[in-house]
Length: 506
Image 1: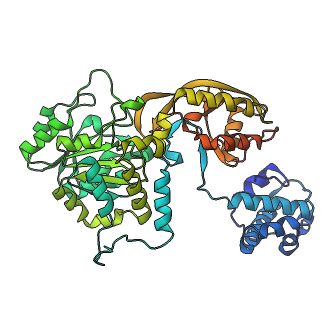
Image 2 (image 1 turned 135 degrees about the vertical axis):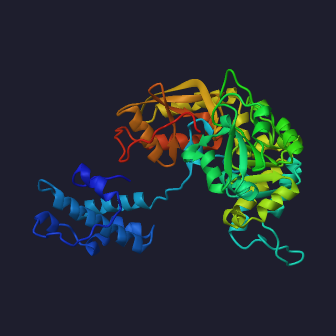
């Protein structure tokens, strides 16, 4: 919990949690002499109670760090400051230690409306996947051993069977994300040679990930063809030479070029590749295993369609439209997948038992398409009817309006986005609750929501804080209201500046 003992700067200094050396600190200052000792503070009730919650060493270390920062603050103060009583100081230290010991990775309520929110972990896992992870994580597992023969086995063998069953590809493997899948594929297939890519597909996604840079890192040479808005089959054909190793198509998932455009379908690229004896690689990005047209989502390629058209390799993510854990999936012909899995870099990019367990459990759910909306969270969220969202909003808004920190809470009909770099221009209808703070600014309220327990991530829209229920699970409704109730009636800016809130993601 944030605190301020003597002056506003003290909070900023102490919350850094960086021990300050005592060397050079003069004890002539009477305020410094009045600072209680570590042992005296540890005997106070607040810190004695805290020892029962966290380890004794953590409390002792926290007290020492706090006092070091306090001494430094006192030394740098322009005027003399009054030291709090031992009990009050101990309470402040206990609150600070609790605040600092909170894990940086913890569950949150996603009220942004972004279903595949990269910052919040993209796709939530299905209950079956969570259970599968718990089962293999809590003990030993048959990761690389065949229980029938007792001999060493391949760790991706189980998920490969499921992937080939669902996509109709000959073979499959898994690495730690789709960027790794792209890098490994280009390294194994085209290092030292050229890969032909349409100029309109030289994408950049989040974190300054640029396809040309990945191409360079792989050792392959980029051969751009066409223009930003138009690339024809003849452009690819004219670029083929003795140095060409492959043709690469990249799905431009996080942007759209509209108007006077033209691009070559995957089946035409495959026919060209067959004619010129070149492999065709299709990076479809988000990894839809089924059509999303029923949810109003269009223009996202389906993996099995690329396989059906004859692409030699298809690359995609596991934690986006597939709804599984973070990983990169490679499916395709037996010979091409074998070339990738036998590359020395494969070991550096392999996934662990937890990822494999979660992915396998998620893929099994696809065997029964009727169960997806019931079992896979992203499909649950996509399938939630507008009437359902409206009912929840109308029920929750009056409860939230009674919270001390809230001046008003009004139901609003608005739009959400899929996120995760997928279909950036397609909006999804939704209902939300627009909040106005009783005190402080909208930014202060948004910040406080992110730092309450559980943390609530919202978005700012039309100078109000919007809680979009498209991404709030019904089981979280009570926790949402209870967390807002704890904000109190005197909303003050939190210690850290509010993070930039976006309604769209790349």
